Length: 410
Ligand SMILES: Nc1nc2c(ncn2[C@@H]2O[C@H](COP(=O)(O)OP(=O)(O)OP(=O)(O)O)[C@@H](O)[C@H]2O)c(=O)[nH]1
Image 1 (spheres, rainbow, N blue to C red):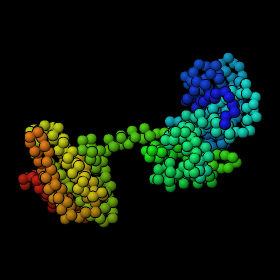
Image 2 (image 1 turned 90 degrees about the horizontal axis):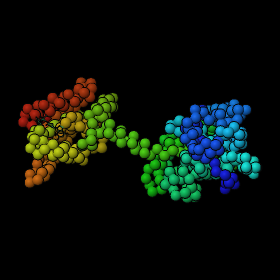
Image 3 (image 1 turned 45 degrees about the horizontal axis):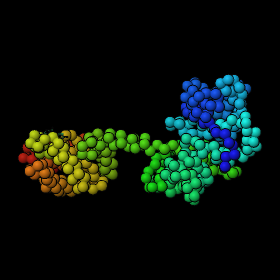
C-alpha cells in the first residue's frame, strides 16, 4: 500500500514543544536519537525560517478545529544547516489527557515519485498512521473504513485486517456506552461538534474489558464525512483508579464500606427517603466481649471472626440495604424503605444467624454473639446522625441488659 520506500519519522508536540520523537525523526535532522529532539525547547527551528510562520498558523488552525489535519510539504533544516523537503502528515492525538499534534514526516529529497503521490493523500494517510503509537480508527456510522495495527491490538485482534472484516465496531464497545457512542457519532457527522473526547469501555475479542481514552473528529474520507477516532489504552490507569477508589471506600479487612463511605451513603439515603416519605431504619451492631476473643485466641482469630461476620451479613440483606464498618467491632446496617417492625425482625434474624456461626481454632470451636440497637427515621428525625445516635443509645441499653440482644430505640 505504501509506495514510499523510505522510513518515516514521528514527532508529537504541543506548541512545537516536543513531547515524543522517534529515532527516525531525529536522524532526518542529523541527530542520533529521539532524546536529542526531546531536549530541545522547540522544534520550530527545524523548519526553514520562511516557513515557520506558516507552520505556526497551520498548527493553530488544526488545534482549534478550524482546519482538518492534512498532508503538507515543508522545507526543514537539519543540524548542518542543509535544507530538506519533507512530506508531513499532521494528526491530532491525545497526549497525557491533552490534545497534541502528531507529525509523521518522510524525507522527499530522494523521492521525486512521492510528489505525484501527494494527490493520493488518503492512501498515504492509511499507510502513515499505521505506524502511529496511538490507535487510529476511521468509521462511517460504526462500519470500519480503516484501522491501524495499534487500534486492532488494543481491541484484542492480532492484526488490523481481522478487525476490518467486521461489519460494525459496535460489538467492540461496551453496551453501557452505546447510547453515548450513537449520540457522539451524530453530533460529529452533523457538525454540531468539532471534536469529542471521551473515556469508554471496550470489549476485547476474548470478552475482557479495555478502557480507552478516545478523541473523535469528523474527517473527509473518499469524499465522505466520516469519523476518525484516536485511542489510547488506559486500562491500567483505570484499574488503578478503581483500586484506589475501592481502597478509599472499603474496609480492607471485611471488605465492607468504611465509616466515611457508610455515612455518605446513609446521608444520601436519608435525604431520599425523607423527601419521598419512605420508612427507613438503621441497626447499630456491636460484638459482645470481643476483647475476650482476641485475648483468648489471638488477634488473627478476631480478624477471622470479623470477616465471617461481614460475609454473613452481606448474605442476609437485600440489595437495597447496605452495611458498613463503623469502628473496630462495631457495624451499621442501613435498611431503606423499611419500617421499624420489619427492621427488628431482620435484626433478630441476623443476630440468630451470627450466633449460629462457628470458627474452628485448633481443638476449640468458637461461637460469638452481637448486640444490636435499632432506630427508625421518625417524623422528628432531622438527620442521619440523629438516627444513628438513637440506635447507639438502644445498643448501649442492650449492653447493659446483658448483651446478645436486639433493642429498639424509644
Ligand atoms: N482482631 C481484631 N480486633 C479488633 C479490631 N478492631 C477492634 N478490635 C478489638 O475489639 C475489642 C473491643 O473491645 P471492647 O470495646 O472492650 O468491647 P468488647 O470486648 O466487645 O466488650 P462489649 O462491647 O462490652 O461487649 C478491642 O480489644 C479491640 O482491640 C480488628 O480489626 N481486629
